[in-house]
Length: 94
Image 1: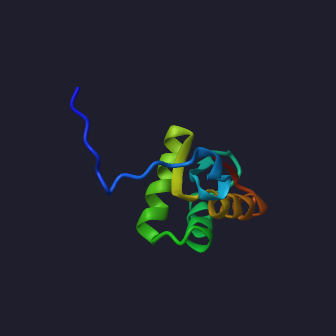
Image 2 (image 1 turned 30 degrees about the vertical axis):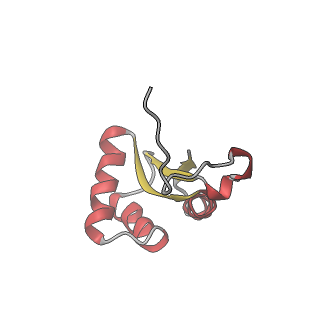
Image 3 (image 1 turned 90 degrees about the horizontal axis):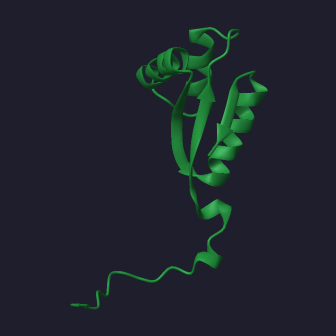
């Protein structure tokens, strides 16, 4: 077995990683209440999407039932999910 040492690879102490350090996905779910325009405005205002991104996500949410609208640090995704929920959208962080 051939093993070698790479100075660029570091061991990660799994216990030192908190939820805030982990990458997470912000998922928005379809509903029968909110319009495309409203969902798009929420995505632009809260998730900082471009109009094109917001439109694509709103269509995916509608046709597929849900869409990962953003990925990033867990605490930031959790904050965005709470803001989307306050706007009446169904959202979760995974």
